[in-house]
Image 1 (cartoon, rainbow, N blue to C red):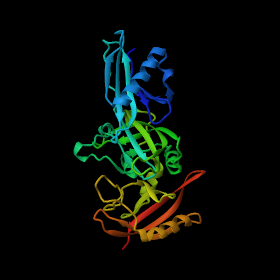
Image 2: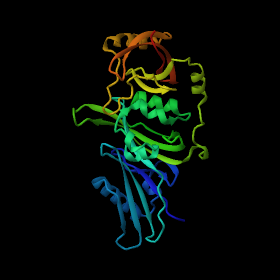
Image 3: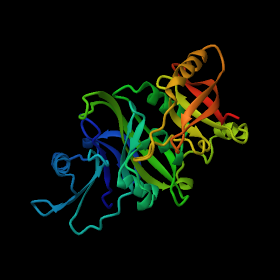
Image 4: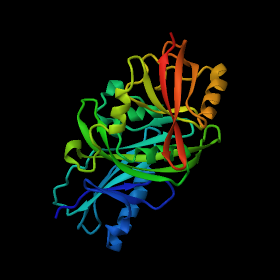
Length: 333
């Protein structure tokens, strides 16, 4: 049987673990569960350490000439190694192509997301439209989540270092092709080298495991709850999920508000709520414990100007310990 590529994560200080064997996801499996022989295990650790030091691909034959070893790094735009594709087989054996995979991060403290060229290749993003950083909510615009979404959002809200998550969601590529994508991630507490502040960073890898309609574990085309919400939304209204702890946008349900500066893409204008309206937003958030709340809030536009919106908020229960805000927003007359 031909050797398969191993997808190995290296998110933090924990020992590297396997998150994919060929196109089959694995749940943070110890390397020695697959690499049985001590020689294979030691070789893999040595190669991973070498790739981590150089961030370059390795393709070589073992000293005894009996094995060919290939290791491909998965690196973020910021230069952080998240994982390694590892293959070991006979020198004359045909090497299969690994599934597309890419590294990414969510800065949960700042609400920003960043990826890698490998990830944008997986998404089919043209080179002229690539950005190195955007608002975290932007990462959800191409994702069709599975029934574990409440669990995933709850983990984002709590932002507890050490938390892990794996799932199969559907990615809509820029060419509209739907692909089943398995992702693995881990939350880490890190210090920003620029200002010394502690931040919670979610580090992950996404692997394309096949056409969405051919993968049983991929989510249904549209989750029923979102279909109901979209059907109940009138023209000019837009819905979103908001983190009540930070008042930051987590994701849109349906289309985002046109003209609103929410993506925070690279050199675009920084999004934000008018500082004078913060007390109104806080009062709305606190009032959700007693029922629905309403208010008028100003948000920055792509033009740089402020636009007033009427905002209705409801409490959204993610699990027995976690809530978020479900907001409906429309431009004020």
